[in-house]
Image (cartoon, rainbow, N blue to C red; front, side, top):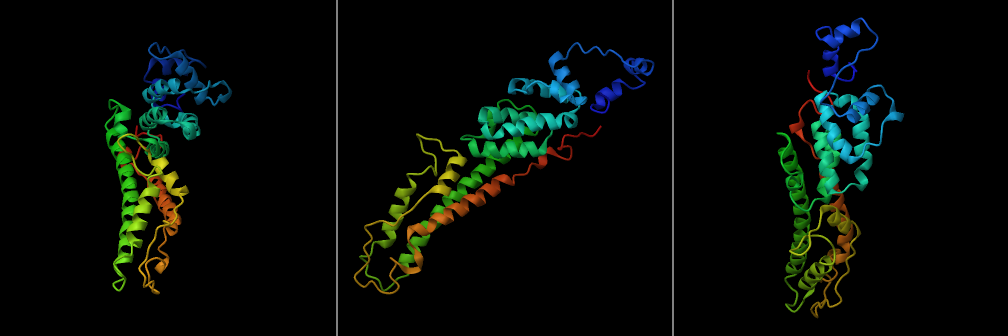
Length: 286
């Protein structure tokens, strides 16, 4: 118990009655009337590595058990059990579960878990993270949520900026052909077709539908684009005609959309939270 918790180490030391009694006996009874018996049983089993006696750590249990761990300053001792359970559950966890996991990981200062949970929240959230979290439970929760939200905003801007760059490129490709007949519709037709095709994918939210970042990225990774069938170049149709010059057909952007999605996933995966400070790996300064 002393190795697992600085609080118990002090309590079982020579300055307290329990420690004095332990010095003259192999066992000592410690009254803990304010603590949940089930929590203390799990805590003791973790301390003594009796993993076969640890009950399944469901979400309701963990949400309250974290307070006992925080009280006895034993985040490091319970980390393999608590953090391991949360990380194993992440692939199937929705926002209601993730927000509780984030609170647990921040209370126990598990930086790696905070980052992984934050990534999942960034992918699934459709509104500011703090709106999911409810009343703040600490001075760092607000800044951490703000960093997650900023990453989402940056990611969404990357998508819209890339689409804007495609439109600009198509206009520039048509505009630099100064000798072309004005009746050529290649540039505008491709832009209109691009936006029409992209509308069929989950690339942005609307007034009637909220789209999360994961849906956006999956659409970018799987979308297919084709040139419009109504392209009408001018009669000149020279070697530099916009219809074929430089491989400017819409199909060329499919691979680039996938690459952009990969860049955004790296951006989200590299989130950092300096607010958690030095004591962010399950340890605290005593």
